[in-house]
Image 1 (spheres, rainbow, N blue to C red):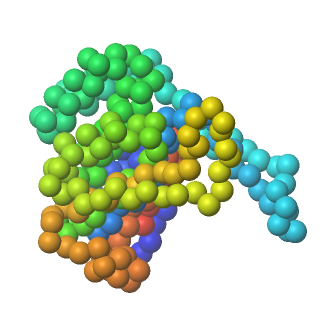
Image 2: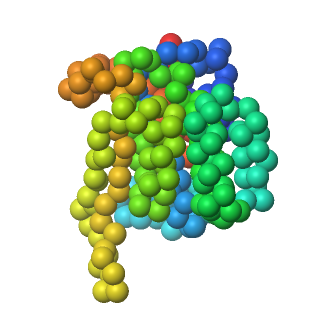
Length: 213
């Protein structure tokens, strides 16, 4: 049965009754990008035109004051020594910055995703150049650099030109397998066939998931 979960995805991911080990075939994450912006949900009129009605969805702004407790608890409790050492090194470099607060939010969730992914499972992480270089390091620490398969560049069909710099025309999707011998074609066929999927759009506004059962 498919299920929709609402709330902090870290809480749900750590609940092994809901998400047992090795129970999920594919994970797709579209988290906040640390864009320092607010995002609203827009509505459309029956005619298809954008309506004036909208509501605030989430704030993609991160503060160390909000993330400090999460970071220190993660450092104390995380069983992955390599990831702990990486996060401590990033903290030494980034200090109490907004970027470090963002990574302190992302790292525990990536660590919790590792055990629930099947040995033949795959993961896609959608991000942009704001934090992609740091997220790639954390992914390598959690899932092993050997399981990284590709960096997919998603080019936008429309873009606003910026005369002062190169235009921002693309996002990045990191693609990983748990093990190396599975092929993308078979993964996509299985996905289209209705296997279990976790989707994690944003930890602040709630998240959607298809149950592993």
